[in-house]
Figure 1 (cartoon, helix red, strand yellow):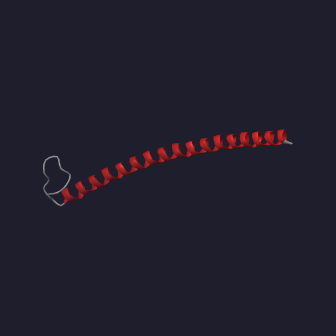
Figure 2 (figure 1 turned 120 degrees about the horizontal axis):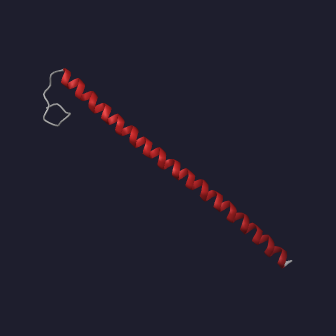
Figure 3 (figure 1 turned 60 degrees about the vertical axis):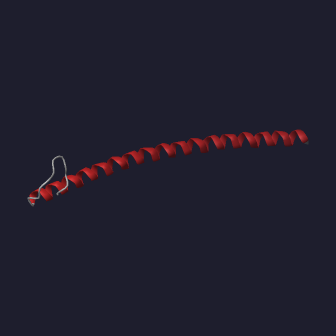
Length: 75
């Protein structure tokens, strides 16, 4: 009886190790995807900031507002 219990315990342990490996792979894939999405979001936010800055520059200059050298913001 003891040998049967030991074999069952080893089988359960091996099954848990396989499950754990699968969970770790899935977690790593999710982490990788999050990293990609985070990078993409950063690019989009940077692009929006550039567009917003250009929009400010266009609106301000069309009103004849002065700018300092190298600045996109009106005085």
